[in-house]
Length: 333
Image 1 (spheres, rainbow, N blue to C red):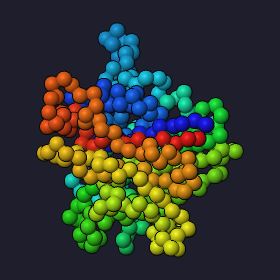
Image 2 (tube, rainbow, N blue to C red):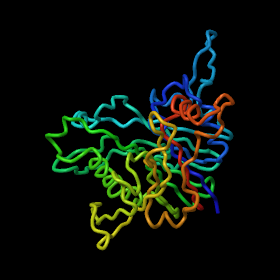
Image 3 (cartoon, one colour):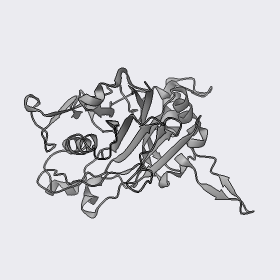
Image 4 (cartoon, rainbow, N blue to C red):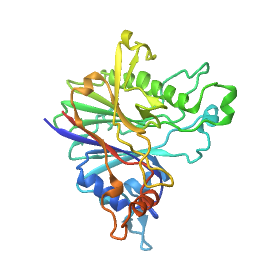
């Protein structure tokens, strides 16, 4: 049996690392012995995550020493990817114009990447091949998710499939002529597409399997609370086509977890919404250590000596880390 620890973290518009406490983020990853870390709101092609090669005046390459990966213990690989927004999706972005992407890091001593048809490694990529329906129009998710696949190192008896999402929070006024429901309802409909259509497609795809058991997890910043309006359902039910239906007639269930507050209030030293979650089906739930699912109180961990009050700790955290807390879970494979 192998115990795998998975983390998810909205790092709030992380670009070049200037003014950001990457050491503190790395300490958290190292301390909790995370094996896979999925990040949302990563900009600038993810250079701050994986590092790049810079040239010395002599022409020799030197490491990009501000990268997060160089601060982590053990061997790691990483991938950054950015959803491509189509022209018809432009009004759905609201005021968010940052063109953000996802990053995912994984320990290479724990995982191998599956191989494609021609023997090439299947690296994490944006999953964009789908045709959902929102309201009366054929409209895509505003931000397509990142899709990653990991095989247990050397043995290849189990595969983890990870869908990383960041559901867009706002709704532009231009949408009022297209849909007549609120931004919160739009977020809930996006979750239905992610859980009812994309999750099922990924979880039920066995053509690439060779005596390997696949387990799938949807995770990230849903911008929806679990257990309070605007809400994501604790148990979402879908028919064979991935459409939400009444639980009593359900053919497929997706369970959502992580109820700890995971966002930081703007002006007060308090936690707010539980927007960050993990979702998975009954099959994957059997391998999850349910008592391991929680947020990580990074506000009060690894604080600097001058942070003597809660106000100072929260203020520094918002400026140097994020307006979200990381979350984590464990699975036994």
